[in-house]
Length: 601
Image 1 (cartoon, rainbow, N blue to C red):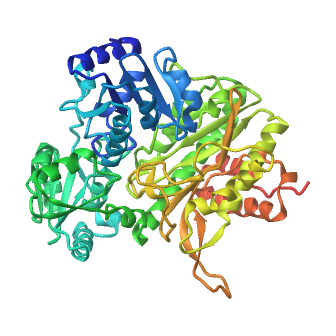
Image 2 (image 1 turned 30 degrees about the horizontal axis):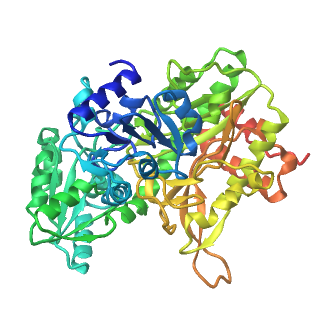
């Protein structure tokens, strides 16, 4: 079954054997993760889609693939349009499509370990109104036909020491115990992988690029906890670190433990806990309180140790990226580079820090028209040569013990066109507007998102992705609960959340011209208190963490105001001062030239 057509046919045969007429295939795992382990990549196996957000629905005589605006072009390149209809979300959700296409009597299956209870209720209701039924399957039918499906990772957990965490796991559990007491609850389910890693001050290698272990947890009102994880993955050091108040159980015992909470009041996050968790709690007659995972906000609001670590990681990472930019400036005009070799070279510079644990995501190394795919992933088959008089977009990041980075630079190879310079400068103006913003406590990302888009909007342009996402501390590169976007939604638990001091966010406006080029400028920023003389309320602003030069060849100085030119000059002076001592003489001379003040004409 090497082709998508053969896999789709095999799935339909299995559905028929299971007395089902359809099945819903999300891109997630039992923890509602954005990035999932190889064992859970069912959507990619079935359809060929390699993006990080999407889903599919398979019926007996038709199928559909659902993606948002980030993947409009990519889904058409990777998924056979003869097998699947392309459906854009959020305009049409999988639930909407099912309601319109299911027939009376249809039995549409779903895996209760891969969907939220809210989705199940909404989709079941929509199908019921058309005479069809949503059916929880005892076993995922894709697993039955995916004969070479990888097994879950067996990598061992690692201690994340206090020198990087800034707070002990015991202290974190104590905070949660106090939170439970205030809610008159006995326990809370923690199922999000990054929450578990943060709470217990452990890290793992079970998901590529995201240092988390596959586990579930229950935290109790006495500050003790039950951790459900493969015991073979726990070294004596990790067991000693967890301590006597953390009881370890096999991951497979989690469902039984939930059913054993009868008579208890249990808090569950409906956005990160799958429907199966609620079903097992209901089966045991537990009283359920729906509330947000208590790890989400403390994890997002970095403590002073984590902030210092992030700054150290960005300095180290910025020097590695700048070495790459210097190398690229010399090699790209020769016409011998391609996307995949350039990504490998950037990885090499990061490896030379001797502190890189992993990339924070697959590097987006995109030449020419591939740059117009916001979440493009280079492969041996797709890799394009980097041609003269074109744009190259590189979005990349590193995982270091002290912090996680994420940075995008757009580079001119040869001579950019006036249109390219105009678009780049409009993106830059939006980036500066957001980086310079001052706003009151309580401000949400959707209230300031327009700052980054205004200069594109003024000439009828826009981009189809959010402007900013949260970033973890040696954790997920996409972290909730806050985001900067036109509307709530997006990665994991991100949504309508106020920005708070200590949050690390991205600032990444862009512009994409289908079939020609893409532009994005991304720095990470720290939300910080901002003292303003005479202010009548507490105010916030951003400190830019990312250190790497912008490509002067793409800046149309005439489009910048004096204040914007001042921002670029100040940023470049900071980059040169911070990174210069970390570079060799040749790279430092190149950096000094690339960061000199902008001329006014």
